[in-house]
Length: 439
Image 1: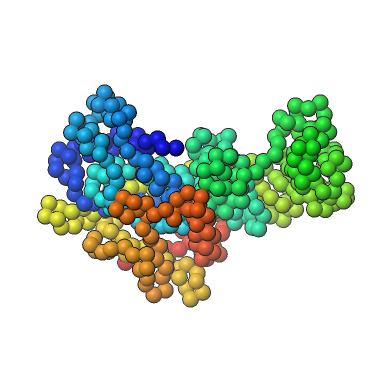
Image 2 (image 1 turned 135 degrees about the vertical axis):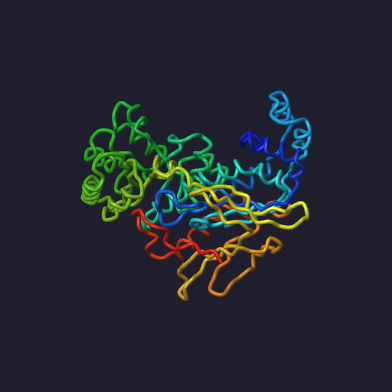
């Protein structure tokens, strides 16, 4: 898709640019920062997702003739600003946490450096992507923890918008899900896809036997048969009769799952189908997945809960200016002082303090001189540098984009979660598992 993303924004981003051009402050160099003041849902950690998508969207953030004509016809901004927008290209620098990294309150997950005008225009786009994708990834990470070694598939496309469905599948995969039912996510991001049949397929046929036989004839005995359309024990017996003991799996989408799963496992074993797997998909979330930990479940399918962030559909990230040059070219740190919305001024660098055993102990945020340059090789003793260059002089790092970027983010997530203390794996509400410290 090559369509412009310039209108994925709010009107006030453009009117601020309009007024700043009038005031002569639009071209002041600035530093903006994306962070969360707290972790939504009182969770122990957050997971950053959406960065790779955002890089693609920024690359297409252009005001083409269609956008310019609409702004002109609706008198949104002045003619001078429309002329400026016609040549808009983000030419600054963006640093941030690698996608898949865990974060905590105050973590500067994204730092945007450029003129005020070119940087402020990206606010709504950045927040709409990172807030949603990170909410899904955070929920998905908790579900993966609850599942242990058992795989989870994402299947929530029908429970959200069509664009969010693709984004959610991508974010869940980064957080450790094994596959998705969404084909566009598979095509766009290289995510494994899965799926066989729904209840409609069984109800279409004159009998459950005909439905099972048709599916097996097409997909082979290794397919997964949905066995709860009518009577589960009868369907399991029928499935093994038709497919034989080589039946790949049965799926259960209703009932008291711990009880039903145990009964189905016993029945499959009694029929000689010892290797037939059991997958469950009944409105699961991290809590129900954890409840099934002692049950003979082989895999899970999660829909609604993951695409809505399991009760926390946003991560509360904000996009704030933290420094700018004055008329003399001197850098000035700025920060809000509003009650419950205060921010910390100044350009920042983030490091994770680790114990001798490599366990995370603190998120250390260093407020740096605005003239300091970021470096991927920056290191402090006993700490791991968290920020990497994402866009340099307007050009995005290709490592973090496309299907390859998704795989890199998936690896980063697994490594960063492995560093966390065991308390991070608790599903109960609580404080962040490590403190954020400003240095």
